[in-house]
Length: 593
Image (cartoon, rainbow, N blue to C red; front, top):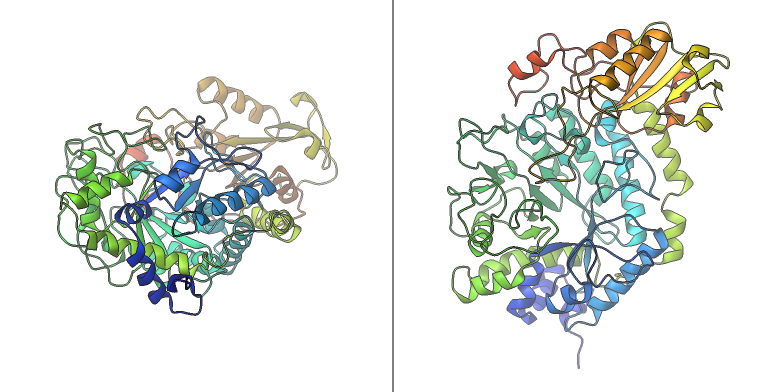
């Protein structure tokens, strides 16, 4: 039997796509439209269900025809590479042998977000994107993207579900669902520059066999800034993931209010398209043919939870349940799928119900030609990534590459550069070997810089590390996003008692306070009484102490403003960043020592 054209690497990509598409059944096409979360067993074997996720791997690939999965969890490098090879071998044995495209959320963070399934583990540790924005060096961001690319490639991860951009929100207020951890701060212009550099680092000048496809995740702000989206499209970003714009009291969809407005559209207009795509395929979502998308011909993938009920982002769809965001509760599962396809979605992130697409075609609600349009884009990406020729990885090479000394050193340098000195009342740089009282800092690390004491009364200097607080999110709609109010005291344990403990320490001994800004925090009491106040966005104790003792230079400048009293925050517009008349620390603030 002759080799089918789609397996011939010498043919043009478009010819291979059309040949493969013509051979696919409707069920095989429908399977391409779902990008489902998957776990693996700790020893690198396939997870067949019964764990935290309900999907059995073999059933997903062989019966559901899914060839796009999102790896959830932290595992060893060799085990991950071996799991990838087992998964690809399973896919190779299917009728058409379509390789699996594997995606991941960020894995290069210094900060473990509570409840997040994608903490860094063995990968090189870098500051969060706001820290890269604090440095403001596009060349560094491109190098970061290249490091991510090389480490992901080593273990077979080919799609990065980042960068995330929420430019246009006022990150300091927490309005609009703003979560700055994944963003490059509040400046649309700087964000656009860094997004372009990051995509170049991940994908190179064009998507190819040595690329990792980037997913530009966009949440529109009130002024709908286009710079970041245009930068992503200009850099050739392979995928777009529009996120919900929640309704406001005026129904504009620019904030996160609790008013009576309809669910607002996440508009594909951020990349030059036409009709809107509602956060839950809402009542006003237009229907019709696939919209034209000038300037962006990549893949549009919906955010997790569009079809499933809140709190079940990784579970199976629930027919006739309260699916997704407010404004579309009246729609059944099938109609939500149809509305999303009408609006231009190519793939559903975090979902797994291809049988619904099959039924929509058989009932003539959606044409097979409409499904083909999206499948073409998805197959085109696979061919451009070279997955049909190189689907397997070398576990030995993976262990040599992930967390290599070169990458670790680059990340450590970026951590130091990103630190932002907010105040310094003649404390820094520290000299000699002072008696150190530490809280939130490893005593063993601190002992390399000074004499660690257990009683603040015996200390010359205290070093206190705090994290922006987390709180429970009662809706459980986005469990990976930090909750809590940005007005809470920035401390490991929220509440007045902890704040009193902190202030008592600041009054008793000259104290260097370092606050990890996972989100902007309100720190008036701490800022006024600390001997020095430093912000970090993901940095090790060593990075902090190197800066404190003058062994490294902090270059960071605030990528968003930090507000004064709560009243100022509540009175300001939720969707216009950096406009407070008298912020505690303005956007771009940072001291030299």
